[in-house]
Length: 296
View 1 (cartoon, rainbow, N blue to C red):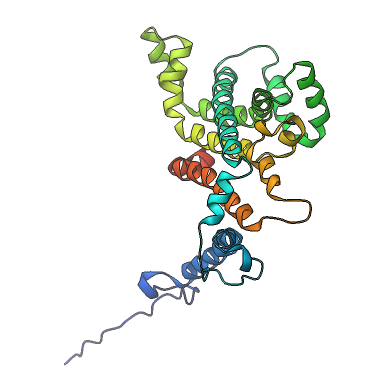
View 2: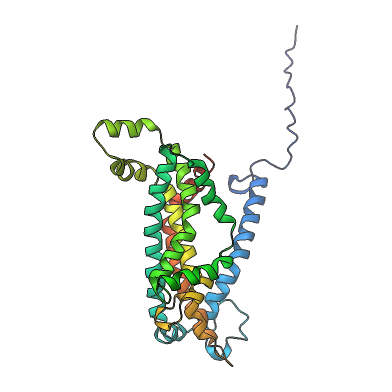
């Protein structure tokens, strides 16, 4: 009489201990990464949240505030910030400059990037790398030449002068990123368009641009943020308060002997809102735009 013996082979040891499913099905290693990511996010958002908290604090207890949630919140700081020191005018000026900079830069850079991506012409790569080399020059070193140039063009103390300078400073990076996207689009699509009688401009606007929306969204976000937050050039080129942009106008809240901290923090929060809105609008294209752009 034979007895059947069941032999169970031991499970192979993976060498990775503590990595099995844990709470809510999240592995321990992934939970550690999540905890680190949350910690870094709180560390990054801490100053912003504290600024928002101070913007709702009454002026009397603002400097001594140590809690994140105000005990007696007030919106008077926002009313004072928007109505005093011509803040609303500065806000509109920055909006005009930033939107115009984005529009002009994207149009010019798209045309240039399309030429670099699709056409062959003498010194093509040399010209392209000259554009890239300009990224290595700090903007502060160009302040005096820019000032003299704007003076000769009679564009000092004007929003148009700021727009032209911002467009020139943002063109190299925009051309660099858009060229990578345009080159990644198969040429067969363009050839089929041209067989239907489409010209170069129609190919760019009806084919290349729609397929490159992630790149256009990413560069638009970067250009808007750069133009909105720029301070040294605006401070140097603008002399009259009616043409101040928002970063320059915020200095009006700092007096000789006192600082209106409540309105200053409220104005800073208002100045942050457009950049956050632009980022949220372009968020769905941001990840694919960064990962597929210049690495191609």
